[in-house]
Length: 256
Ligand code: DGL
Figure (cartoon, protein in one colour):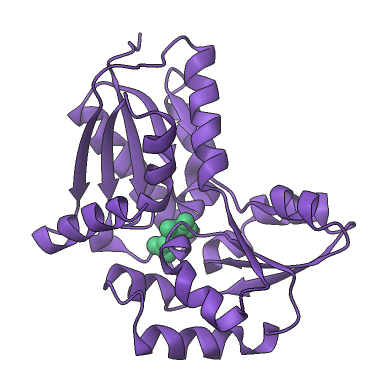
């Protein structure tokens, strides 16, 4: 049985989940969080689905072995697409929250609009995404935009760098001037939102699922009478033994 003082684990392939943790902390500052980024194995987005599933299940096991958990937030679209079903089956007692590209928000706000979905290769090729796409593609034009290389630059802290500009210009060139909104369907991408906006232009609205995921987490905890409003706590961990990475994670959190 979970208790209110148990932890909320937040998992991503690296630093990306910090963009979700920001929303969780804003909505529920009194909770205890255990964040784990698997930067040693990032990027997940170009791996096979089986590899991502195994890495995600191993991360969940690690987190459950470390602290008593009341919820696990998969702050990673790629890990959600590959493993959320298995995790729910394996840990029926645990509240498991996944994240998926915010297509519903985009379709609601831009009926008839042209919407781009930037995400990793795994997310875009999984059946889960096709199901999501077909729910909304009658009302708007949706185009998939894979972004190989972007996660690596975010992991390397090159958020506002010449390399970032070159990569974004190259990958986004076919879409410039052709979109009303872009869904950032990978949790690393909101960390590079400034550079993305610079390339797409300020007129293109960027949407992500961080806020929705934090709200869903709060809703599920409240329904289970597990919401805690005590003294918050935050533990940040990473599979790469690199203090610089942890420092950068704190910096990114404080930028919110
Ligand atoms: N941050 C992850 C996501 O939301 C994926 C990053 C990666 O490719 O490792 O999809």
